[in-house]
Image (cartoon, rainbow, N blue to C red):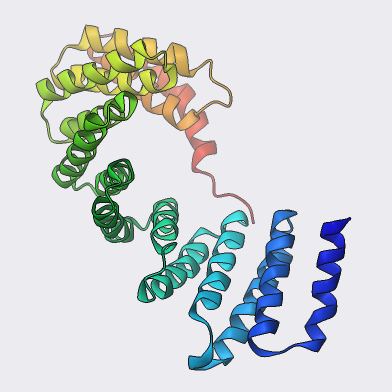
Length: 306
């Protein structure tokens, strides 16, 4: 009842105020309505707040304008409009950085994650490099390590595998210094993935094995499965086809039981299995696997209807 009254009072205040106070009222309303999950309405209110702040020119409080932009970003994010969300958040971060706001770093980290979701990988690298440096200056090594890990993921998507490995190694060193065992293994798994792309089979095998050992010991079975996948890929690279087949079949047995099913990953694993058994002369079995996978791939390739 208290929240309802507060919101009603805010609505009643709007006709009575103008300028900064009016914009602030719209922002407060947006925050309350966001908390109720009504993101379209909350977005419209946040945009109104931004528009009012923008008309105030140099007299507009920069913190208020930044808050409005961040609110727009959060609502767009909930509405799955990721590119627009990241663009709005980038404006909030820019304003807050100019004013040396203590919350700029936190929002910048969020922005980096949104750029990654939007597949704007160059912007991820640019944003998170700044975050990593700021975290290191603040003495927050775990924060910096997480930033570097995301940089490594972005560089990997850009196929800059050597730069990706460098970022993962920096992240790994920081995680290791802070005894973050699982996170060290996460870095090893991704380093192995990059080494495979660079044709470094032996080192990839050794690195993936470390990740598998940690995840197995920690009973982190989902991550263990993905690390085993990299191990199997390294075995293929080294032409250890029987061993690779056994590894990939073990991976498949686990992921096929998952709910919800990751069909893209299943297709990737089974495609590699089919290639191996075709090389072994088991052509009919390979043909049958590829026939099945074609049906799944057709669905995965379909564009979603608007």
